[in-house]
Length: 113
Length: 115
Image (cartoon, rainbow over all chains, first blue to last red):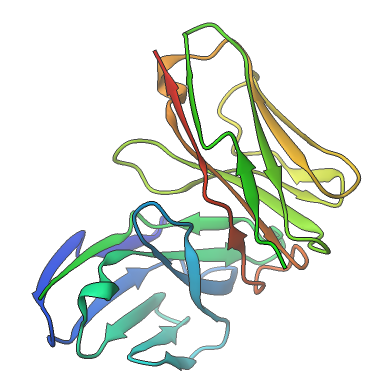
């Protein structure tokens, strides 16, 4: 994998559904994996930054896992709420290239009440 | 404290004109990044600064694009002789240092439209 790939591109769920997204990234020269949430008309907001293989992080109903050996990360949202509607971006930084982030295209989540 | 601010929030310009976009990072953040999102595309890295130096300008799409940072604080991104393909949302972010494990704090962006 040469680029960061996210799937699905978009997702429409009902309030209360749990959902998950996938981010695939090049595993060579990996430094860190970032997840951001970008709501319409707002700034992207960091959710998680993960560096170690096997890392799991949680913030409220949202959690993420990281597998650096195979180059993927999952983001889970438990019991989706309408306020979770946003585009979820993942990005990775590369060893020895500063903090430059390479982003995926994002997953657009829409949660209907 | 204040977050990252950008100005203007919207800019409409005619093809061929020069534009300047400004970014004011969080105080004390030594690293500053410029990204852009064109229609239908993901966020694309343009350039980053550590202090006033730009170690990586590899994402600037052409020599019409330039950026500077002064006093380790405010940065301006200048686009000369704008083209329609320059239309995009330009985002600035800052972080404590340039290490790749640092969270980046984003500004609200400048939406540039080139007619």
